Length: 393
Ligand SMILES: Nc1nc2c(c(=O)[nH]1)N[C@H]1C(S)=C(S)[C@@H](COP(=O)(O)O)O[C@H]1N2
Ligand SMILES: [Mo]
Image (cartoon, rainbow, N blue to C red; front, side, top):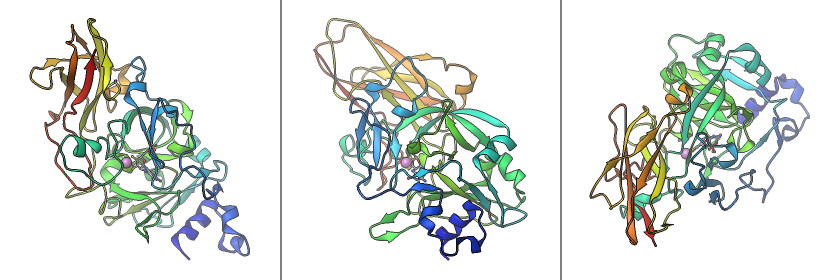
């Protein structure tokens, strides 16, 4: 029996005999398998808000509302390895198993079990793809990297509703010698250059599981949209987006280090990637036109996967002179841990012509944005100060 068939049986909670003669495809939690030609992303992707890459979609920074701290799900970037599955919440089950539990066979939980049995928490965190900014390896540094050519819009900030992973793991009988936890998605198996690598999955250290990892069913007070992991996803605040497995079908808890292609072949630069670096973006279109002869109030945001933002410096003359941007306080203590920071800069009497706007943030751990990002073939962690072109006319 393939792991896939085993998993389907487990989520259904049916004994092996219950499947005899049944068609698996009609029974699983995937209410409707994607048919050929079905879109990879199900939510609308209005052109003014998104750059559509097919299986991925990037938020346009000029569409971000400066008055709104959180990113609505309808405006949040999407990164799918295959396509968004439609999972039936009523028959959905999360299976937690592995030799890191007292009983390796583990437990099976419905969404209602999770919601009733454990304390609900809310956590605000930046949600960002590891490859955010990748296109600038090419356009700003002249060293093109493989992968989706994101500009800076593979990021958002969300208040998640869910339960602490640690509460669920302890309830499930977590052993003290467990070291690794791996989430497995219910989306289609991922085929890379003809090789089937199985379901999207990525292990992470038990320390993160016991710290702030979440099992989330809500975003900004609403159920997750199908594209963002309905009915349940992992959220590892501050960490690379791939760590937050969507459509979570399975959690394996292990007393030995787990690996998957998503922490060895990808999302790895001399070691599996964890916390995201520091980045900044202006809430402007690329090549924005700014009216001459007026004072312009420019806004943007900065964020870090490791700590809150301490300061942001901006330059409107291509990096010759720098001034401190005005930071706006986060809207309440909830956002202070892993949320982003909004800022503004007043540009007095900009001169007619082409200019480059730069923003450089530093977080409370002293991590700052370099002038040049370290090249790596998959184009992860572009954290250099981006040179944003504008025309004053
Ligand atoms: N099951 C599953 N989980 C996944 C992915 C995926 O393709 N399948 N993509 C990952 C990546 S690379 C990122 S950046 C985030 C994107 O989450 P979003 O689409 O909700 O913004 O989900 C992660 N979790
Ligand atoms: Mo990602």
